[in-house]
Image 1 (cartoon, rainbow, N blue to C red):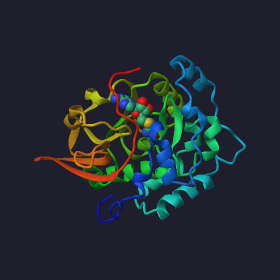
Image 2 (image 1 turned 180 degrees about the vertical axis):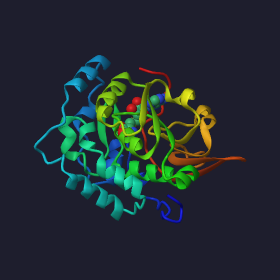
Image 3 (image 1 turned 180 degrees about the horizontal axis):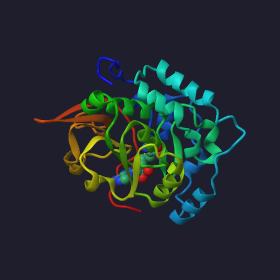
Image 4 (image 1 turned 135 degrees about the vertical axis):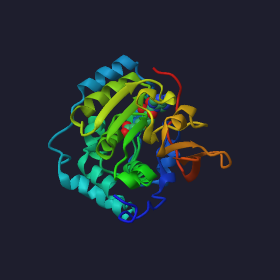
Amino acid sequence: MTRQQRPPVRFPLGLDQVHAAPAQRSAARSATPAAPAAPAAVLRPQRPLQQAAQDAARQHAPSGLGLDSVAVRARMVDRLRSGGLRCEPVLQAFSLVERHRFVDTALATQAYEDTSLPIGLQQTISKPSVVACMLALLFDGAHARDQGHLGRVLEIGTGCGYQTALLARLGRAVVSIERLKPLHDRAREHLADHRQADVRLVFGDGRLGHAPRAPYHSIISAAGGDDLPAAWLDQLAVGGRLVAPSTHPERGGQALLVVDRHEQGLTRCWHDAVNFVPLKSGTQ
Ligand code: SAH
């Protein structure tokens, strides 16, 4: 798809309103009064990792709640559209991927609200409008404008795998890295039926990127740190685009950073304030 066919990404869609880290959820909730109260699970002390994995294995997507219906996802897509999102491939991906299958059974009825949800181990799945904005930004990079797809994608922070499933429909090959083993294992289960693209789930420290499949046309991070790891920039292809939350050097708080690699070097562009979970080092 060419640039002429696709209107530019419109920003913001309330990006500053929320992808809250657990400690900051109450402030984020006050910005979105329609959002439900944070489930107690977020506030409980972290369970041992092994038990979390066992719990995850017991979870099954609920049936009989009407969540499987196309209409439920169509309503979510309509809301994204009326919020200003115009990137048709991204809207199409949202209409196809069943978000309720990626969250805890107890939260499934909230899966199609525009809210972030806990996925265990003090991590959260971003609200759909934030994910959609980031994907639309990726789609506005040079490679995607020329080719009509995201090409080879590197995702940092697999989490429950929801965004990975969307990326699988938008790219040609996806490498997704997660540092928490129980989440990596759970995402593998969730993604068993989402193999549209060549998807490789990697358990490791995403700060190092994934050199064996580099360079990437699209890099996206679901966790933010004070700096952009050098490996991400090294592994970004010419014509490629990176979208990640990062600490803004002047404003101080986290904001969305877009980096493009050109023949001549890199350009950076800061977008709205955001609030993502921290990008941590090592694995657990
Ligand atoms: N897009 C995800 C959101 C997950 S939240 C989803 O759809 O569920 C962010 C994730 O980033 C968490 O699972 C966290 O463990 C992970 N993360 C944080 N630092 C990381 C790192 N250095 N490498 C890989 N994953 C990391």
